Length: 403
Ligand code: AMP
Image (cartoon, rainbow, N blue to C red; front, side):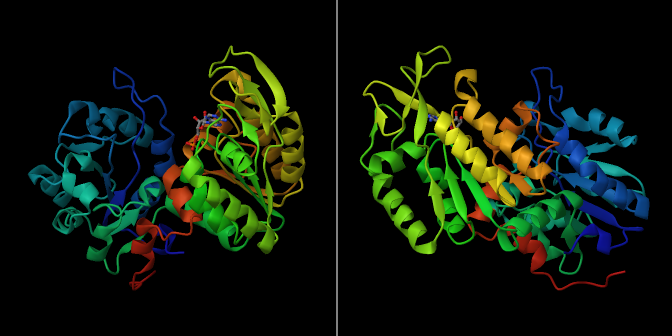
């Protein structure tokens, strides 16, 4: 893989696309700095080589150009503290001081650019804007897996201005290596767990997983469209009428390919969508009219646990129920614990997608699974079989002179 380890950055200004899209509270304190700490090894390696670093990122979704709330100036002091360096800040990522600062950057120094999304050209993938940014560095490093599925100026388009001087940072390299391992070289049995609210959001990943997985476990709100398509009574559970035919097709295709699909035979049902609703454990195809399925039931949980602990590779995207409410968190928790069990028995487990990552953190299991991906949408698109622009832009290179 083409990573920063293949290069020596002595005397070079490395322009690094990082993902510093961190949550801030009302006083602009960073409430979770894991995206910043994840990028530190990449920055340290370049500085250790004798290079200098220019960091560029987005923060939030500014609509109207420069907005104080979304300024990256709020993270300068924390980043300086983490690095033990006084980080410089250019308050316009494509302005005169960005050019001036970057020109005069000395070895060991770090410059942070203001939010890229203050320019609408960033998300449009504007080539002139990408070229302007490219002038700030001698070498382009992409370390932002979370935006790898976007063809934005700083994540993909910019790479063409560094035909022989671009590579992945450590975060990106690890993400890509782990995703590739599951996609191309899974130890079998390979079980994919797909949950979440809607069939429509997960249909592409399920279709692609039919080509690679041995088992597909389905949970969450999306299960009920499958169950109703087979003639079940699902009450007020989530349902997507327009996906009924597709769910039938998936089951038929799975059977033809020898992929085993697991649907929850029973559910924790509730008489309203609230943590203190009345609940019962019922067969998923016998849900009374005014009730809804909000978690997988006891029998489904036992079946899923068995399949997971007997697997050698596990991919998990999406919760088994409304895990944000304690009354409906058990299915997701048991699945998470089974992943930890399987991992301690030598399986490789990859967790991705905002909500499954959130569930792993909620149950404090992040150290008990093989890898929790930082890229929700990016990982989902990777397993949908799409080529991610941020990865393609680095891989399509003619390799320059390596040391
Ligand atoms: P997704 O973003 O598609 O992975 O969906 C995650 C969301 O789906 C979470 O907020 C869950 O609360 C929600 N969810 C999971 N299962 C159900 C269900 N049975 N009914 C309603 N919402 C659900």
